[in-house]
Length: 158
Image (cartoon, rainbow, N blue to C red):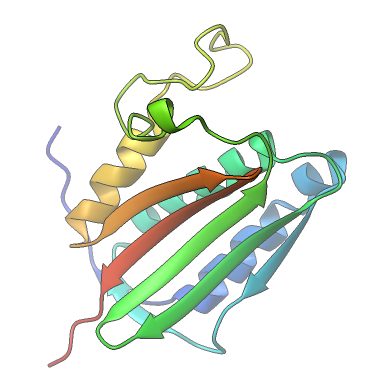
């Protein structure tokens, strides 16, 4: 479907910290913690609702797929004209033969999971579409029980 962005300036630092705070009850239930390593204030012009949906999806997946009593990390840094946001967790390694497919619509890592105990396989496909609408990219790496989703967004200069 056609999606329009409604851009406005937002403090991404605050957005990510607030998201981590909102997930506290879900994190606590699994014995997880979420640590953020973000600059004090990063103002970015984007569609805040749509970018928040991307971040929510990535953190939700990290919670679902993390080993109990582990730490989820959210890291943000700016290098030149690129803003990089990483969500990484410790959990089951995504097999290399499935890693390249996780952004496809309706693809689920565990096809035996029904929608009652897992998603419909749309979250990462939607996240990819929304990141690309912002002119960015999203990728995933998984090895040695560590999975990292990386979003790279362009920093526009006038």
